[in-house]
Image 1: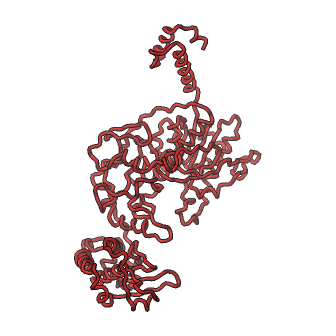
Image 2 (image 1 turned 90 degrees about the horizontal axis):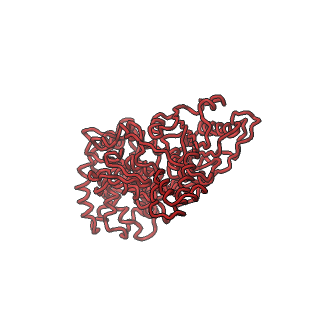
Image 3 (image 1 turned 180 degrees about the horizontal axis):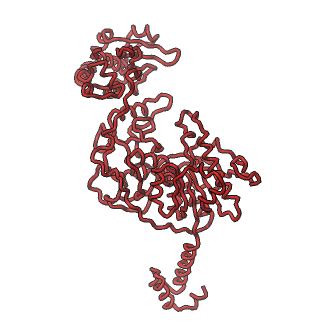
Length: 590
């Protein structure tokens, strides 16, 4: 300070030029002194503050990336799954990357030999056995707990060794895992010298990624010794999926020139953006099944189909599946009845990875798994920033130049899923599913083959009207000989009759082929034949088109079977669904 005060303004300007400081020309002497002092402070901080991090179970690098973006130095990363290890190594070359099983680091000598001393240790042990989607929580958790204990063993050893550097540690996992993690662990149970102190778990919290700027409402258990980050985003200013999708643009848009990152100040030329410009349309049978599971699941509630983009994104799963309830499925651009999977780049950005982050893998399944298993980058950044603020330090992010992945889904010559076929099932596979999204006054119309003689390949398909469920359920097969006289004068009957003749009769002709399609067996003899699920979806869509929602009808003979006592008890939607399915099955030849 004294040195600068004794200088003239012209001398201070010369110093600014020598240090290549900009913005000095119009400043007064005291302003120049402040500018030089600030520059000196920042320079000293940048050269002195290096905070090192180890990342265990690093996967593709979501946890590492969040700390890297906040200026921390990732010096060591370990994972057992080679595709994820290769991806981490590709994107974090300045780090010592190790591909091995953490359980093989089975002594303190190996800990010292393999793992450097760092200021922070982070880790995300595999969560499959703790996941709520895994056998309702009944999966064997032995290996999962073993991996957690090994991680904690390394923490305690590093924390208690002489001249320890370790200041913070964080473990991330699925929310269910928190009930299996104790408040403290003795050194003895972690396989260390029993004279060492216990490892105390100071923080056990469930954090939500969307609270920190992620477009996912992804919940995670965060335990360890860390600073709880302040929430930065509320429901009102949450980041929605459409921000990500609009920034990247349509995967089929061939005119886009430059792509701006939705989360970071980064722009890439279209030619440099990997894993986005390809056709991810899903087969219609996948869409039909996903729609039924999402929109017609009684006790678990309805989900959007296709996924809405004006809200938080559904949690990204590790499994690449697009015919399940958990699937993320978007409407395909400019196609009213076609749907697509998110591109790998869309998934990566929804998880918070920058657009230049490269995923190394030979197929979409491997890349999808890497992303779905990753720690959300936004949450990792929030944890890193909270620690940085608590340490009251300034960190500078190391520059890096990422090399474009040599295997890139943009190079696909045909739609991604065009060659994918559902695995065939045995020809004795049973089927009993009701017409989707059509349950009225406890009534539903179901298609089944449960009375078939499977051993002799004699397949019997039935249309059954059900009332209620459980022990008090009632059911009846009510054929069209009885229905036709009752409904033939209804306003929509001719429309229904035309629909059946045009859209159903040509595509339903064999019980055996119907069973083949039920079992995902496709050949030249049954290619045009509807599958059972396709037929039910077609009927459901037609019923929705009709303006008969409030129409009721009396059918006294049905009252006898179903014990109805009210007049006009039967919705015409149910009755027409029953009639259409009955008619469809009449065309099946055994």
